[in-house]
Image 1 (cartoon, rainbow, N blue to C red):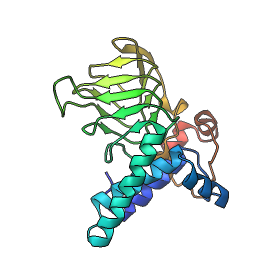
Image 2 (image 1 turned 120 degrees about the horizontal axis):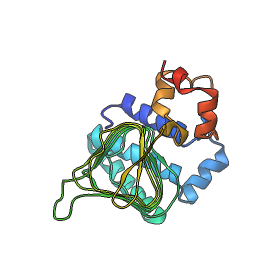
Image 3 (image 1 turned 45 degrees about the vertical axis):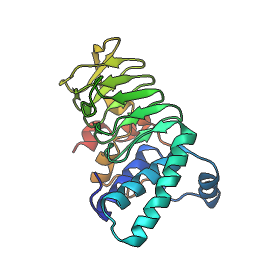
Image 4 (image 1 turned 120 degrees about the vertical axis):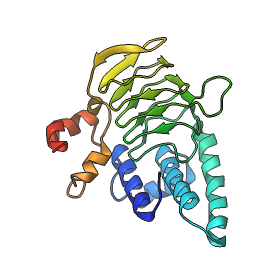
Length: 227
């Protein structure tokens, strides 16, 4: 959760790297982001709203937060997202526009790669029995996760899987209805571990925009990233 300006800057940078966005956007891209709803504009607005909700007080901040909420609601509606604030850790990467529904009681760790038609919700009849998902998790298209469950770090959820139980084993792929373990995997093949990159300062001298997860892993092997 963003609790300071330092956190805010860290989250934004992690999201930028996870989305393979350039460090400096062209003016034309900035204008396009204002005029036409896009995922990166949504993610930036999400983080700004989190910062102003969690950290900023006073009349001016309240007024600005009011307009931020309007913008956030408009972008959410246009893109098909129902994603509340203070759910995702740094390094979020939403792959595509389309229906995504996340319960506000969910907690999802760093470097999550999220696809369309995903639903993360509570157990039927409860408001707060929502999933807790670890770091470096990949959630495939159409996946449904619900109930008071826990997913360990490094889990990849397959397309259209229905997950209604806890998986404590790290670095595995799960899938099916109901979901079960399919294989041992490395989610660094499917997502960009932005927080690792920042902590090891790989992003300072490297643009990294437009790079794929597998190209990143080839250039910076996991052993090197984890050093």
